[in-house]
Image (cartoon, rainbow, N blue to C red):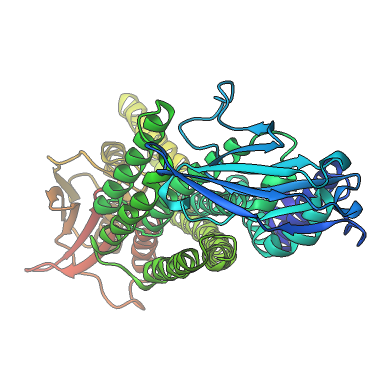
Length: 579
């Protein structure tokens, strides 16, 4: 699995995982719903019953109206064959069914209190039609809970469950069911892959938010489809299905705002962060009020959506936006607008696939785009790390030269004979110098300036054996509270020594100073030597400076500048940004 995720076969691996999950879901549905994998036989009865009359009563609560539909069941034998059921799909509507005065179903009964709030959700009422019911009068009393469903026109069908599922509902809801399933499974796997891959933090956040947002969008659409409640009607979780869809709607809008914020490289996106907290807090309050039966979630969803649209615009234009953010938000708004128009015209979201299509396309285009961008960035980082290691090796090879070691050991040999205490001090300084050099090979992070300063002083203590009074170094390092790459200061001082005393020019005075400026720390190394000549004349010096400059750029974004010193000599200035 790791090899698939980390290698070039990532898209094929994701496709295989998605197909496997989809097949597993299909097998589970067929197992739980025998007959859903085949179309029902044409002999199954299918009647749409038209009521003989409709009675309306004004009531003081709910949506203010109650309707009673009265019709007579057909006497034809095919209408009452085994398996025939009187079925109707209801949204946020309470129902009571009776035949010749005998109650068969009553949603207003006192023991039916399992739902939260007023709504029973969206569900199917399905009453078995027996042969003895032929020619009898059926009364169906419907009480809309909300004004939004007050004018819904119910369709009463006499049909077998399998035929209703395969011949009526699946053809009508098949597209959205497939899109919703695709969005849910694909979003889940994108989020899972983002956690499995070794991605940078911002890319992982983008993919996780995008994946979960797509999952919630898919669940929102799926939970609003009549075919889903029909598939699960035997479980008796119709209200739970509707609330799952409502909560998914809230989370989808919150997460879409977080996706918009995560797409920005700016870590201090205050408008986006503030809008996210407002949206998440509002969604939490709405859920708590619903659980306490103090507010109806159904009545607040449209206003929450309008408020979220405003928060998205504030987040988008609260600071300078780039094209990727506009291309993320405007198509989503346009798709939601198209779906809203379809809903207002047809009174249902079952024929409104625009938003879900847009979300799925965004998942595949942006999700895989983010993965590709993250993998390429990771590859670039590894390449830079390799270049950094090479630069360190070059620096070490420059710093630890055989002739320097031989000269030092020769000097120590003489001191052991003439001045043993001094020889011990030199050995300690030389050991500290070598230790700092070897430690720098494995130093992946920046080190404290004080450590680099001690390393430089150890080097100068060793060089003092050779040059004595010919070399004078002055330190003015009052500002030391910063970090820098290992082997930054010491090579600069060594270059100054080699460029002057190494060529027989003496005496030499070197000044090392540090200061703090806005946004950076500044190190200055000045010498009064002859100045750095052309690269052809001072190749070793130029290579040393180039190594330091390269490591500064790679490890901390620092800069190194050389300039002639007034009156003769060279000034090397290092600027290190604050971390």
